Image 1 (cartoon, rainbow over the protein chains, first blue to last red):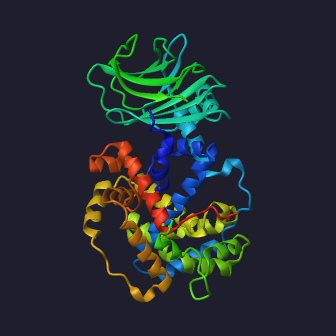
Image 2 (image 1 turned 90 degrees about the vertical axis):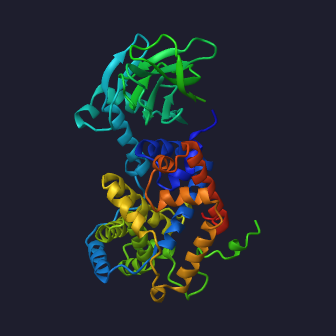
Image 3 (image 1 turned 60 degrees about the horizontal axis):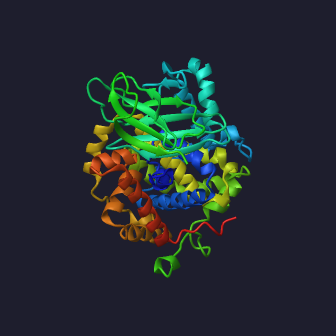
Length: 242
Length: 203
C-alpha cells in the first residue's frame, strides 16, 4: 500500500488531523527532514489564508487588556527543553491515552490491551501497561505507519524493532456487524498470519499493544466472528511495516 | 517557475511605507521589549482576530482567544525559530490551532453549522482601516485560492476556515479519505507555488 503517512502533510498543516494522527505525524517529522521543510512551507501557506479574514479591527479594549496582561506575564527563556516541545507533549498525551488501557486478552505470544476511548486516567498512566506503551512510543527506533482502512477508518501502527513491540491505533471502523469483531494480525513473508489481538465484539476503535513484531512485514485487520478466527477471513486493511 | 505572482512576493515589506516587519518586532519582543510588543499587536492582531473569529464564529470568544494567543506570543517569543518560517505564520499557526482546539472541544457543532450557512455571504470589508499592503496581500491570497481546482479549494477552506478534520470534510463531501488528504496537500502545494513561498533561503 502506498498511502503512507507522508500524504498527511496537507491535512496536518491545516490542523485537520485528530490528536492521535497529529502526534503520529509529529513523530514522523522528527525523522524526515524533507517532510519538515514541506510542512513548514505548507504551514506558511495556510497562514496566508488568514489574510482574507480581516473584517474589522478588534476593539480598542482588547488591545489594552492584551498589553496589560502581557506586562504581568513572565517570559520564557530561549531554548525549549525537550519536555516542553508541543510534539513531545502531544506524543506523551497519546502515550498516556493509549496506556489508559484495559487488559482484555493475552495469547501465548501476544500481549494485548484494548481501550474503548481516549479517556485518560492518571492512576493507570502510572501502571506497568503505561510504561510498556510509552516504551514503544518513545523508543528511539520507533517508526510510524498510517493507512486508511476499507471502506472507512484508519490504522496507525507504531513499531519499535528494538523493543519488539508495536502499538496499533484503530479509529472510525464501521460496525463489524452482530456477533462479529475485529481481529489483528501480523504477517511475515509466506508464513500463515499470526493473530495478535481480538477486539471486543462490536468495538470500533482501540489502542492495542502487539508483539513480538521483530520479523513481521505486514500488519492486518480483519472482520471475524466475535470468538476470533485462526486465519483472517475478511481483511479490511493491511499496513506494510517498512 | 515564471509565475507572475512570484514577482509580487510580499513576505517582507521592501521599504518603510508598510507596517513594521513582524519578524523584527518578534525578536525584540523576545528580549522583553514592551513597545515592540505593542507594535507587533498592531501588525498582527487584525489577522489573528479575523482568523479566530472566522473559525469560532462567536465574537466574544474570538476576542478571548485573540488575547490568549497574543499573550502566548509574548510569553514564548524567545522560542520562535526564524529558520523554520516567518513570525506571522508562527503566530497565525498558534491562533488557528487554538481556535480549532476550542471548536473541537465544544460540542456545539450543529449550532455552529447553522451559523456558518447564515454567515457565508460576504461581509463588506472596511477598506478605510486596511493598509494598502494588507489589501494587496489579501487579493493575492484570493487570486491564488482561485487557481486551485474547485475540489481542492473546497477541501482546503472547509478544513482551515471551518476548523474541520479531514475525516469530517470527507464525510461532508462523501469523498474517500485518501482523496481528501490528497486534495488538501495538492491544493496547498499549488497555493504555495502561486504565492511564491520558499523557505530555503531562511537560516
